[in-house]
Length: 275
Figure (cartoon, rainbow, N blue to C red):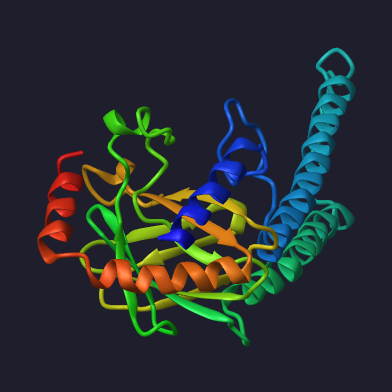
């Protein structure tokens, strides 16, 4: 239990800071990047923002010029020109070039975020209505379920309403984490914005993605696929800790969840279903 207490203390210290993968009130942009995948996503987003801004300004200026230059009092006898070869070639070729500029980094990003060739840890994430199951195949099959802390208990426990969970997904910081996602029932979505992770959990299929938390911290996410009446009540919490703390947590977690009675697990499912 000493390792778990230390982990909780570290979590309190992290929670006291603002360096969290956490939604912020009136936030207008993307969450701060905490992984190489998210950094590339943010970079592509910024590129697209520049391109669409330039296109919008160009079209606005063109419309303003057309309205001024070809207004009725200046053109009482409008031209009946029906073809302009140079113009038609230009408005075909230029959009194609713009799409190529967008496509190249897009495909590179899709390939980069698809999977990691050298994972340091594998975590299998199984979604179900309405919670998550985390399994660590590299750690003797450690497996546990994660449920949202009930809203009426969150305040008294110092937890974040609708975001914190009873059992977090704990990973070592700075390591490549392979994530295998699937579902027991309907389509869900494993989504952690600050880590640049989003993958659909599809029944009967196992999909792969990955992330690397470059710094210790707590990163929040949620299922963002409408999966049923309690869709809004299945948050995700990923805690990245130094490798030594992760090893200590792993040993404690094996004992803790191996000793969890089946009746307790069943009662948690019932409580989650009543949210």
